[in-house]
Image 1 (cartoon, rainbow, N blue to C red):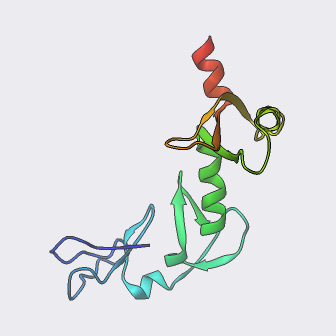
Image 2 (cartoon, rainbow, N blue to C red):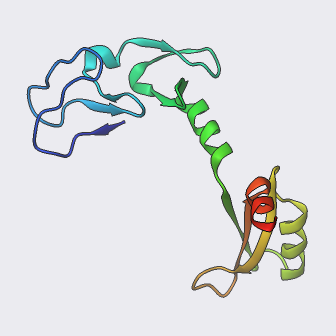
Length: 137
């Protein structure tokens, strides 16, 4: 949920009402600016089936989702993941084996490198298998 930052009053994406002062209508992802009356309206999450307020939902690819399911769906579309390991807590050799052995499901290990401006943090970079295969073929 975000508030308006520009100077002109917005219109509700559902009922068309105009806000009295600029910045009072919150933004619903995938819907637009909505008045509080429409924002408090109950909608059904197409992921888990729970009823939530429109203000605490988002639309992704035409589906109305609660914030929890929205975040789960967004994770599916992330192409790169970076996992950090601390050399002060474990040896570099075990970091390398853990980075390879504990790769997230559906991802391929691309690199293990020192963290930016660090002398003890290692970063393992993973890429979605589908994206990696497309680049390699």
